[in-house]
Image 1 (cartoon, one colour):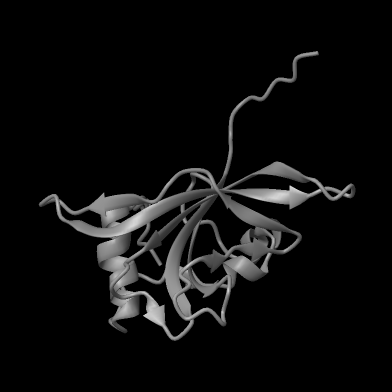
Image 2 (cartoon, rainbow, N blue to C red; image 1 turned 90 degrees about the horizontal axis):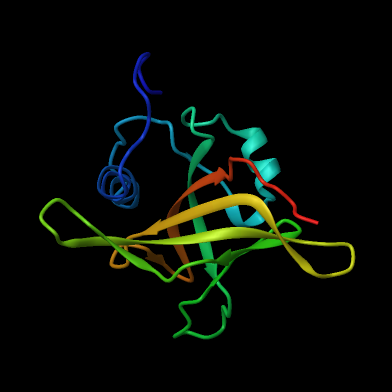
Length: 161
């Protein structure tokens, strides 16, 4: 846990360097605030109800495994992002994450959670996710470990008629 008086707000580079890299290399982590969870097997409501929020910014952090969308295709690197009764839809292209020396240490991609409606259509939900990965350390057979920051949208929303 984080000591009293401290707020867990790591930068993208810190998440990759001090948490995901250490986890992938089986090294001790600086704190145990990031838990391993099945992000892609659960609806975000269920997942976040089971875990403590990491900070006061409505953020949860998880280590999770992704599986290939086409497991029988050896060259396939596309991940399956079906979760609960919906899916995580990419909202931006993969962005490099740089360390303080300007070197690429990993990548980050943004997603929004799309829920299926009773009519079979998809609707954007309040859930957002940032997925972090380190390409040269991530593969383990057909699965890959990533780290995810999940949050929900806050602010005022107005519907104009």
